[in-house]
Length: 391
Image (tube, rainbow, N blue to C red):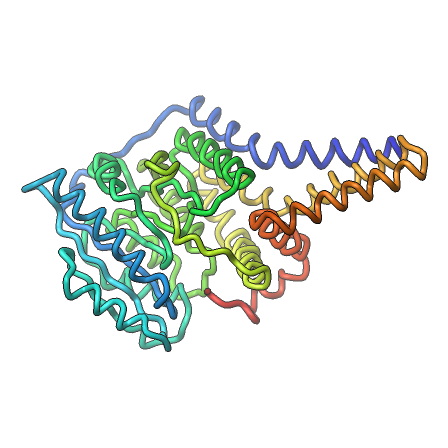
């Protein structure tokens, strides 16, 4: 039993490390070997920005989000002066039944930045709202922002040199939840590091959906390619498509910010049931793009396939974690007498229970683990979208 436990533990650990850290370094090595192929846009310009915010019953958070966007735009104006680009904030109302519209109207009355709302007349769903908002956008650059997100007031100032570059297709600001504990900060620190590594391979193919900025002329091409299919993970399918269609342009990950990241949130703590639904949506969304876009995108751009492989391998992370846990149990049972092994396992179970109850992040990771283990049963949902909601 001890030998079996060690084998399971080492196998799971190796797979988890390779899927998390190994793939980005392989992509970086390939990029270094092949050399850069920059193809700047000849007509690149950055004279206007539209910030697009999809919203479904967001009366509790929409004012905080919009206020942070306005402050960032004001800071950019103070920084650039006469060269300040035109900035418009547009909120996509997706069949709201609360006071979201009232909150938007109240804030828009006294805002220094134009804030407008547009109703989604068609079927509900985040992808449908994004298509509506992006289809109506005419600015040089477009920012997609989730309701509940909070921008550092200096984000646009820090981002503008990258946005103004002619070889940039998008920009992904770093994100850190407001109420992140020590474990979650360590996890996000690792993610920030990996995104930095992916910058050397042309940029990430997946970003955090809280906020991301895209060059609009390129974004329109990607949206036409993606069409009306009900994509659940827009924070993957859009950057993945852009990187594959525009291999000579970079999608830049922007790390930093006064609070550890450029984008945060209002600090809501997710209920376990809500988190389970969100994680289920993410898993099904990953199954969607892997089945429909991975091979197609990778055939256009090998670097994209390498970078995206991290997300593919990560889809199975729950099984690697299960192997590690099972291997640990087997190793304890094999190395100790039965009585001592039972005591050791009981102590570990009690420790996990205490951490689970005291850490919101551990509860969310547990929800992600359960959703990850359900990958085989969720394959059907990836085709039918049964029971999957956008919120």
